[in-house]
Image (tube, rainbow, N blue to C red):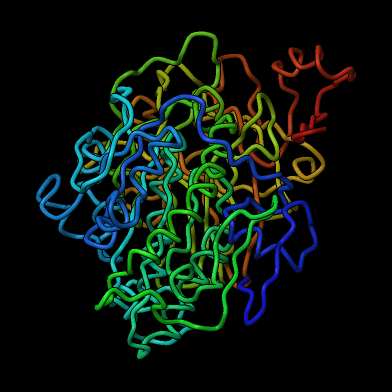
Length: 536
């Protein structure tokens, strides 16, 4: 929510629904009450900034002073510029180019270069030696031509176009999938600076308000590893701010939508750049402390996979291939987190987000959270590629814990098997049981329940080759009515020989619950379920 014409502060601890958008504008997760910790990191942290000329000016000691200010706050800074990286990817930082950086077949190589870069491409000071390791924080910014967005302020995400409001929204929605796969990194969007020409000023303001207020919340994104700094807004007026002040997060706009700090052209002036430095550093420290305090920031990370949205993953995960010692589940979302990819019919208003979250957990502190809204006649799927694939043929099926926002929602469990060139899909249709709403239902699903999908060759054929499994999907397909809700999945494991096996809509008792009796003095019988909510 932007505040127009007059100055307001937004108390961080207020939970009123009227202020929810303002909290999200500061990078907060929904309804989270946290006093901003703006202290710098206690140890040096490596940071890289992807930018062009405006970013170079902002970094320079004799202009915006950002590089020196970052060093004074214990950040070891590197950066990219024109000509940098694989295939000179540094040349391409317009909003649509972020798909190449974060959502393409080249993403693994590009991002490995980003994480290992240690050079300077602007004139700024470093106050201490390189601490070693990879870059932990990634700042990325498009330059001022990206504020000339065509279209209309309220345009929905659109896969077509270039510099339009709709396509810009589409791009940022798409790259969230990569960010969700790297909870060990902190990604900070720096909004593009404003133009002096007001031809597209209304569109620029609307898009940046969407990016700050609605982007993460609208995608159900709850991980703390993505944040936004509204560089655009800070440069539109003397009294326009995005900062921490008096223990609150301020995101204040004045109604002006064009560049207030010109330098003779549309590059922000030294005064505007230094104002942005002053406002950004406390926010960056807050973003960092919030992220670093979350367990997901130090969780093992699986390699990202490429995929065809219509068929599922196209590559099998690499080594290692053994389940870690002491962990029965191949995906418990605490010690073992798979690569996650969300797919949906992009020609519709379908929405799906899947990422680890700590609001509910069956064991440990984290589970996979899938939030979805599927219009009639369309579909969405969350696909998991295990970081440590089990020996699939040693199991009799799948076992997982399920919690949901409401019962009766139809869903599918999908096995993707075969090879990248000849992918096969096997499906089981299920319905969210009532027990999973009250707590957790432990689902045990034998391989015999899976059959080849009807739209592939040999449709209806029983699944018989667990050794060929590449990944597992949880899908949601709507018939004549829209389906929407949230489900949590935890402790995805192989069904062992001798386990009874049940239909995916029926809860069963779980032998692992015995271990939880130490923490929870409950008497458990077959069919009972256990709910652990963070803080309860």
